[in-house]
Image (cartoon, rainbow, N blue to C red; front, side, top):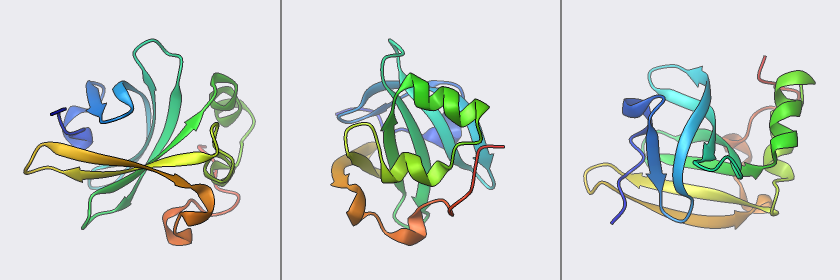
Length: 128
């Protein structure tokens, strides 16, 4: 069994997500009573994800796969965060359900049209 991400407790440290492998937090972007949004990548820096915390009670996270070019655009062109989730790299987004007591998580790949609108960033929202 892989370790649960424990994202808020391990800021800047490696963490694991079943199916995504070992990830490293690259940059934290939204932190209010715990981490809410960050950019991470695999340890080889080949796959990047924009991750957002979408539900407190059920400990749900969305991981949108993105290219290194998209990361660059997010930082340098005020790219709309919503577009990363509406048009992810492989047309699906990882929905991760964390089970802290069991130190486990469940990853499901869902099509973008299945994402609840209230989970997504507002149109026009950028990193800065």
